[in-house]
Every structure is written in C-alpha cells, then in structure tokens.
Image 1 (cartoon, rainbow, N blue to C red):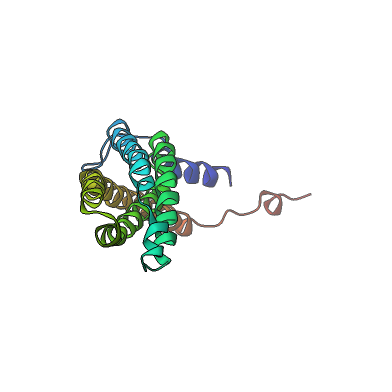
Image 2 (cartoon, rainbow, N blue to C red):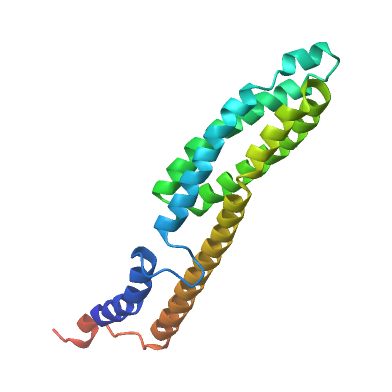
Length: 192
C-alpha cells in the first residue's frame, strides 16, 4: 500500500506544482504587470467618464418630450462607470481571475452600448458639442478594451491547457494504478 501511495504521489507531484506555482508566462499571455497597467488605465478612463456623464441633463430632455428611459440609462451608465473603475483596480491587483476579467469586459461592453444610446439623446435634446465630447472620451478606451479581450481569451486558453495536462496526468496515474496487482494481506500469509 505504501508503494502505491508513493507512486501515486510521485505521479501527481508535477501536476500539482504546475497548477499551484505561477510559472513562466504562456506564449501570448501578457505578464501581470503589463495587464495591470492596462487595467489601471481602464479604471482611470471610467473615472474620467463620470464628470462627462454628469453634464448630461436628462431631466430637461424629459420636459422636451424625451422618454424617461434616458434617465434610467444615464443612472445605469454612471453606476457602470463607478463599478468599472473599482473593478478594474481590483482586477489589476490579481489579473489572473478569469471570472472577474470576464465580468469587467462585459461591463465595458454594456457601458459602451448605453453611452451610444445616450449620445443619440444628447444630440437630439441637448447639444452636439456635448455629444461629441462624450463620444470622443468614450472612444479613448477602445484599445484597452481590445487588449483586455485578447488577454481574457489567452488566459482562458492557458487555463484549458492546464486542465488538459492535469487530466492526462490523472488518466495516466489511474492506468498505472489499475495495472498493478493487488497486494496480498500480510496477516493472511502468517500462521499462528
């Protein structure tokens, strides 16, 4: 039994080390410091969006006949921008959290869509200059959004590869253990 445990531990040890220790970066995966800088820029961008969103006066639009949906979109955009700023800072401290990265990316997408809708209202009910400033500011994040997307895809691919390696090692270990003959009990061979 002890030899079986030793063989099992010896076979699993490389897989456990690979899963726990941060090794060299996989090809295509940006180093933590690089993606952290991008995430800090995304956070700063979201913070810069807030004053621009504060200049949008949806209450006057409603008086001019606009839908109250614009008010909900503005409030949601402000909440998304605040959450994006905080979430990007948090992810910058631990950028290998895939689920948090995906959530952040989806938040960026949602904010971009809401701002796009607000821009139509700003042009129609407020003024084109305010719409142009907000559109320009919103567009500044495009390159960082794209870099985050590439990072998330590469991180997911790396995690899939790690899981595949661990699965192959587990299957190999099971095969080795299954081919070993059962050990006879030592007590059964002894006579009183």
